[in-house]
Image (cartoon, rainbow, N blue to C red; front, top):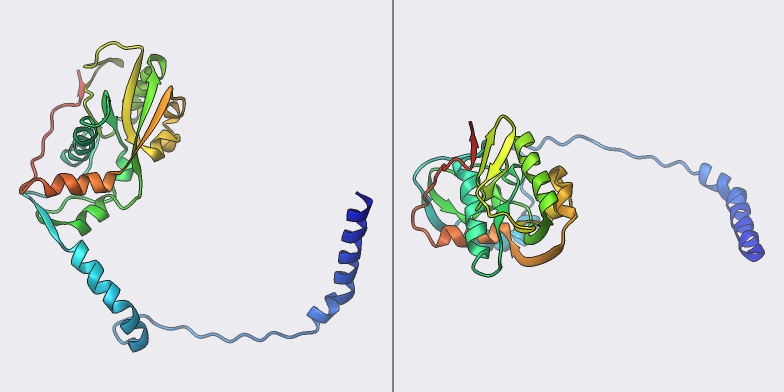
Length: 236
C-alpha cells in the first residue's frame, strides 16, 4: 500500500512541476459558419465513396411488400395500426411457443402506415428499433398488476387478450391460471415504460425474432393489409 501511495505522490509532483509548460502554450483556433442548403457544393470524393452503398440500400428499402387500402395511425386505447402489429407478433410466435397473449407499447410505434404501396422503408419508419420478441412468464399477482397498469395508462397494443372495465373493476377473456406467458419486447421485459412487473418473471425466453422483421414478414404474406377494431379494451 505504501508503494502505491508513494508512486501516486511522484506522479502528482511531476505533473505539478510541469503544469506551467502547458499554460505557456497558446492555442489559437479559428472557425467559420457554413450554411448547409442547396447551394452547398457536393464533395465528389465523398459522394463517390458512399453512392454504391446508397444505391444498394435504396434497392432494398424501396421494395414493395404489400398494399394499404387506407392511412392508419396509432391511438389509445386501441387502433388499427397497434392491433395489426400486436396480431402479427402474436400469430407469428404462437405457432412456435406456448403463449397466452402479446403485450407491446405505443412508444415503440414511431410512425403511421401510409395509404398505397407499403415498402420495407415504411416498416423501418414504423418500427426503427432493434427490439426482439421475448416471452416472460408472470405469476397471477403480477398479471393483476399488468391489468391495473393497462387500465391506468388507457391501453397498450395487445393481442390474444381482451379487457373489460366497469367502474375500475377489470375482467378479461383468459382462463384463470397460476401464471401467464406473455409475448413482449426485450425493452419492456427489462421494465421499460414503467412495466416493472415484467422484470419479476418466473421464466424468460428470448425468441431472437425482431419485431420489425416479423412485421415485414407479415406484410409480405398479404397483398392487401386488413385492419380491425374489436374492442380489446371495452369500457362500460
